[in-house]
Amino acid sequence: MYRQALINVLEDCQPPIIIFVNQKKDIDNLAKYVSTITRLKCATFHGDKIQAKREQALNGFKTGFYDLLICTNLASRGLDVEGIKHVINYDAPNSIADYTHRIGRTGRAGKKGVATTFLTKNDQEIFYDLRNYLVESKQKVPDALNDHPAAYVKPTLEKPKTETKEEDNNVP
Image (cartoon, rainbow, N blue to C red):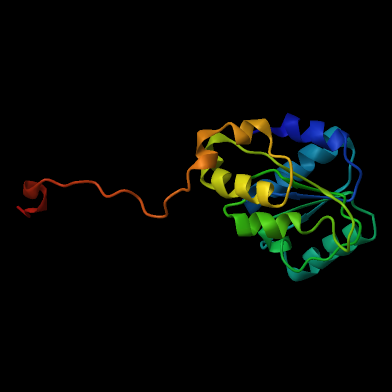
């Protein structure tokens, strides 16, 4: 989707880096692509891997054998790896709570870290909460987000009801 943009970001990053992806089916292909283009060593971490393989990937990442950990939200809570310098949301999280947990993997123990989130028009459901989160935490709001109308309207949780004609309710 926006693989070249990811490569551009990675060129300016120092490992260790975590990349979050929403769909586990996309992780292995992305890891193969990134490792081929950048020569960075990638570990993958998601629910389809058996526990032993997840532990092996995580231990390799913690020890510096792997530069990147490409994972799902499975790694967003409770994962404590020292020295994470950058978290990249390749896919935007589905909620601001998920965003908070993801970016919380960097900047731990008083250290600073960087979080990059790729947003598309399909991610408008989070624009409002993300903009507010960035403002409240005194972070720079990117112009594209700040200028987007969806960043100023709280999305509704319910889908609008459609009117039905009375004859539509009659069963033949």
